[in-house]
Image (cartoon, rainbow, N blue to C red):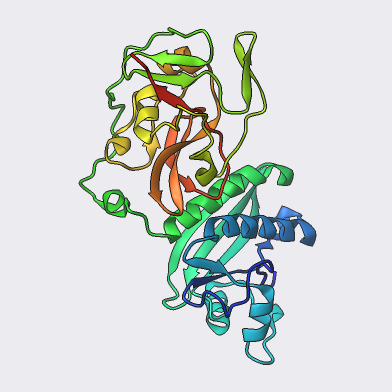
Length: 323
């Protein structure tokens, strides 16, 4: 499988925002066992490009356009003769002036497809980040791929919490660590709040977009990018913080105590279920990591981590109780 440069064509020319770090996305390749058509491989590349665009819009990073690549390649360069390997891909990036190149390969292992992605720094040729998405069906690749691209850019873009994440003395999970949680009840008001006595917070019964009918939340939840989510709650409400979600879920591991990614109890059991029901959505928190990433919580699994602000998640609002 040969390597062809493929970059988004919807951004401004290279001559603007010259100080930004440039990223080129190369067309992904697939092994024969994956039995994917060229259109399917191209579709996966486009999904990666679209998600990368969301994460870089308004940041110090910029995707290069197809026109930029064509204009900057040395005369006579034949990209079709570039076998997929790191040295060749890095050299392409250098030739077109990219600071980073993103490459990917799709392989079949058993009954699953794995989409492996790498980011190389073209100046040093070092591998900066890698991640993968796994799916059993090509038409179900969207969500795992979005998650994987988000994690990829999380490693590419430095975060304010990097010191804590790399500190060997920061601690790791050796078992559940009890958070300051929790004697919750199912006391409710008459309209739309669920009361958490320990914190004094009132949680909306349902995510935004859902309606509480027949003792459960019904409908389709609204999804927001983080910047829009911050102003989505009605007057008097706000998004919960990372710590407030941790307190609600309880039994968070040692990584969470250190300010790192980690896991708490899922909302399928315990006090969270008594308060919010068996909620399986992923929510934004108001806690931000840097302009590119904010913290999210997946109530289905209890996972708490940072996520690209350009992606869309559900919002559940809280307010302080009024004495």
